[in-house]
Amino acid sequence: MHRDGCSDRAHNGQRLRIAGLIASGALARRILAPRLDGHPLRIAKELLTSIVATVVTAPLIAWYFGRLSIIAPIANLAAGPIIAILQPTLFLALTLAPFDTASRILADAAHPMLQTFDAIARIASTLPFASVEVIPALPTVLLGACAVTCLAAACVMRYPARPLIYGASALCLTVFAPALRLPYRGGVEMHVLDVGQGDAILLRTDRGRWVVIDAGRVWKTGDAGRSTIVPYVMSRGGPVEALIISHAHADHIGGAVSVLRYLHPHVFWDAAFAQGSQVYANSLREAETSGTRWRRVHPDDTMRVDGVLIRFLAPDSAWTSSLDDPNEASTVASVEFGATRFLLMGDAERAEEAWLVDHASSDLKADVLKVAHHGSSTSSTDAFLKEVQPSLAVISVGADNIYGHPSADVIASLARAGAQTVRTDRVGTIVVRTDGKRITYEAGGETWDISRR
Image (cartoon, rainbow, N blue to C red; front, top):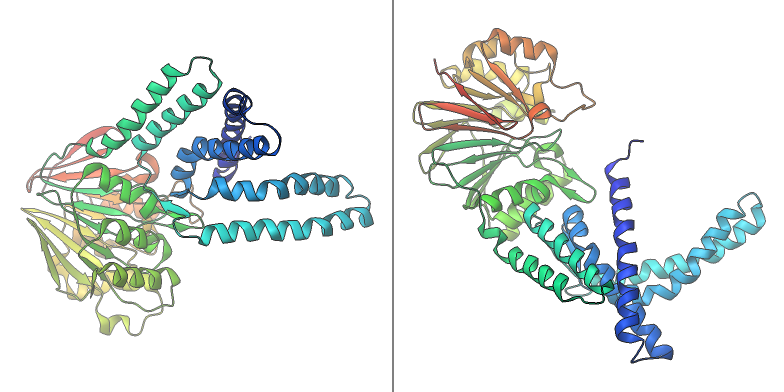
């Protein structure tokens, strides 16, 4: 049976809570029962259960939500008596659902308890230092999971010294995990991250600095910036020089707030196409709060980061003034290093491609093309591809997306243009590397050479 991500989280969380209950019960019998009795014992047991459950579920909570609650043990202690009455009340209401009057009375009785429970959670969440935000890199989460597993084992074992030593060792390793960064190979790299149906592209310069171009999706409990981009950069090291947003659709700007908050780029470039996007407004506020300088993209603006020259080709403000589609106002950037050139198209569609052919045709030729709009049939016209003449076409697209991207016609057009096509929905994250002459790309654990023309 297929289960979605929320269902998986619920099942995993339930298993961990059960493990926490078993561990805390064993620990209470060993430590608390010989020393306390009566009400002090009951209160101490409740507090111990809440603390152990919080610790045991911490790696899972950090991985999925990027936050850890500090106040949870005390809040759970306050909410415990309410839950003890609320759960059987709700169960009885469901059991008596065929009997309308009886079930309604029980449901009405549960309502004030639900309100009280919600008030406890709301008040606890507003307290200073009630929770902390974390950036859950995979090695840190795995080491944390190892540590809490050892802790749970120590709670139930008669001789807990060995699992405690193993758990302490895992915690010590988490301190050094950020220093265990992946080696930098030199040259210039373009990392097209697999963020589902969205764009998140990282340029790494010849001196190890980063430029983030688009920041992926946002969803109710997180965003691609916090879950993917920030851990990816932190695991490799190096400062972030700039954030460039192609346009304000949520699948491109969704993770911008997290990138600005945690990676502190010096400058934030975007096309400034006003469309009333709340996600866009949030990113502008975060840029102001974090002290990141904001700049509007104009054609022929340039930015040099180490040996990399980024030249903006579009959008033109006179062109965008008559538009109502942010896609057609996408930031288009040419990235040059040595004799190699990458062209990044955002979600530009036919009209903007035609504008580029008319106004910037001499700047369009590129070895590597980041295909516009996830391979949509509304982009990548033959006339445009004739100007670009790419050897490699990279498509950032979500697997089994509802839009049918990439279009079979676009794939055929890229083939006619002589481009080799690679897609994130099939191979995951794609890394293109160049020393200024030779170009290679890595995807799915394999590496290919791209012969330049």
